[in-house]
Length: 314
View 1: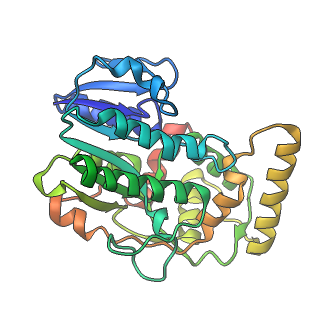
View 2: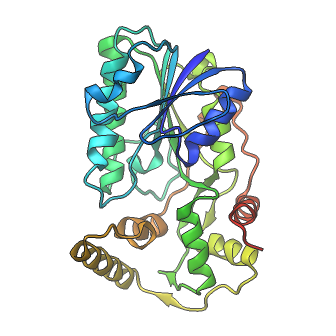
């Protein structure tokens, strides 16, 4: 199969491209900046306007994995990429006989809940990023009705793995950053390789026009997860806690000062990141388990240890 992957140069995209090639697919990688991959055709483009996809006009592909997204809540490009970029890509795919449009979304579109989040729950996004992902999902499903373009949507929890976001969190743990709140909220993660395995299962027959929740094999609390990180780094769990209100105030101040300086705020110090840490979120993956045998390999301790190793700690 010939597959187009957007966001191919990102944290998840790079691993998915490698996996698809290993599975004997022919891959076209759409990237915003120059990149190269073994045995992959790279096309540079921009999803935010129709002309930005002109490099794909003469390219044939049977399916699309749409991973490109902006996570930074302070970025003026967030809505342009996550929503308008999705619309532009869907428009481009119209009448091209695409077998499947696979979209990587977030369980954040459902907000937080005391109950395990399943695919039937209503939208309840709380942050700009989550609202953009919810709107992009609606677009994907509307195009199925309007253009007869089949889809598969994967809603992932926060992906654990060796990237800058987790490097900052590990550094914060080494610096004894205090626990926010009581730390008792469910904090469900998925290791990046398990997420990629799930994405690569998109073409099983049952996955056509379905939504799937993807998460790790266990759900620990925020406090338990922080403890796993400290154990992997060989440091003590901080014995200090700060109120949620104080953490949010600090985050607001950081964003405000960054704006005055004309700088982008650090992702891990933003209010949206505080919300992700303290929100209660446990995910039900039953549908993925039944339809394509989703069985994640990495529990939290294993994922944290592998991440620490790949980031050069230890």
